Length: 417
Image: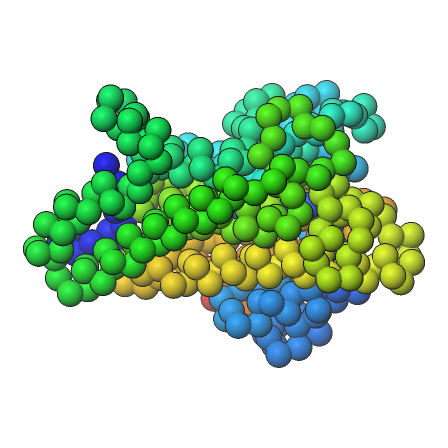
């Protein structure tokens, strides 16, 4: 069985476009950014994509589809606490944090889908501790309860199989073992469906099957990739690949995330682009030598800052690529980007001092919802990050009065006219 995106032949009306976003996708980037690479040309008002700062420049082609929020402050200190508070506003203390936005949304708008939420990543937990907390706690931003967190799935093949392969009978298990293409397995059914479908449905069906086949080929390439060159041995079996395959790995995860949202298999996706205390080596980027965490502690050395900015720029390139994919997929009367609110950012500003103020945060998509895009939204310095999370919940149609008791109200300027 292969889940499908909404087609006209299914009957009914297209997915709702009436004032709220239908999907939420949260992307976490570790280790902050250097202020020089994120400094905006205006303090507030319309965002001029032609003068974006260096790190944000890959987003220029998405002018009008994103806003940058400034002045937000996270809670806690250090990598573990600032990571755990990214979607909850509550730092982990003695193993307890707060319920994260994605899991709150999963309990409300995710309860009618096959998977209430999907939590993905690229790096397993690491060993050790810092400031009295296990470093492994910073491998996720998704907390179901104050003491229960979700381990991200980092093997894209396992995520793909969970979404697109049914293994509860002997034939399915045999096909899985042989790694037969799911597109080939449903080819006859797809052929019969095309005979009854409208021209628009046929085009969408072809686009979808092509996308599924392309991700299968991508996963085949990853399966042949060499193992990790990470500094630290993982706690759990690792799917971290060598640095030359890091982009392919992350884009595979993001592509699967897009397909999961497009088929309404889930409406809530969270992606840890890397561990919150990531020491992965990004030496495949020209001019970069060393691990991300080490370079984030730049000690104001110009050459180290340059490498730090190059890594941050690469992460935003992947974010922009993901927005490209969402924008290319039709959803109802618009695109998947129109129906999806996307949060991108880090739990700290400058990794050199673990600064929790004026966080690097972008909100994108969601044109079907009430949030205002194409703007620099300036909040009062020290505004809780939880206020943005509460605003996103409102953009999804969730009537929350507070987020974990730490928000002080929504960001009105982001709610639009």
